[in-house]
Amino acid sequence: MRRRIKSVKNTQQITKAMKMVAAAKLKRAQDRVTASRPFAGKMSEVLGGLSAKVADEFSHPLLDERGDDKYVVVLVSADKGLAGAFNANIIKATQAFLKESGKDAAMIPVGRKGRDFFKRRNVEFVEEYVGLTGSGQVRHQDALEIANRVIKMFTEDESIDKVFIAFTEFRTVLSQKPVIEQLLPIPKTASAEGEDTAATAEYIYEQPAAEIFGRLLPSQVETQIYKGMLESVASEQGSRMTAMDSASKNAGELIDTLTLNMNRIRQAAITKEIIEVVSGAAAA
Image 1 (spheres, rainbow, N blue to C red):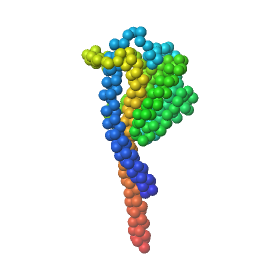
Image 2: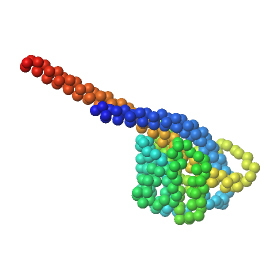
Image 3: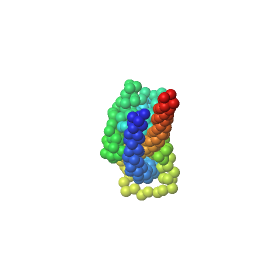
Image 4: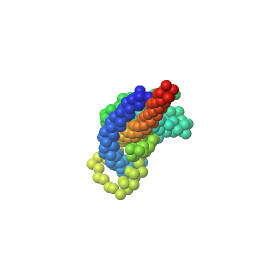
């Protein structure tokens, strides 16, 4: 019993340490998510305004509407486990999306957990990226590399009809939501928010609107991927912190239960010895 109690106490120390590390990483990740959201919103707003100004005959490879047969999903998951239901939720959401669509689908996993899961299910991988978020931070150059790969794949392979990104949106420490958004082709109105804001905002552009619009479209893909990775990292740390807190509390309850049982066993042994001594003295 003492060995079991010691083992659980050691585990509890580990879970408490992991909770503290996750809390420190969460604060940094949350700050970066909060800082990135206004930029992503402004990007959508500007694209919404530009799309209203460009002529209908304006064309761009990233706006090229195709069929609806083959999908590619950029799945952003974690490189490590012990994060509660974080990885399971985004994987389950991606599975449900692919099942409902019923389309021929390939995947670009960003994160070891998502890659390992779908690798065992013989899903086609266009590319894979692991080890990018293991430190709890996201580098912009990694998001840029993924965006360039996605854009090149979409423009060169006409068999690919749509590209989606699946990530976990960070809301609070206790609430994270799996989200699947379309990356390519980019709608001319980047988002509903962009349309609403653009309706009331007027911008003066030095270059022609079509030229700026064409230059900003690749940046929109890059921004969406970078934002998705930031949101996922913050969600991962929040989920891990919550999971480790629950594990620490469960370990404490288990320690109390084992200690109580050990004391009962010890008291029973002491009582038995006393009874034997008294019985022996009485017999003598």
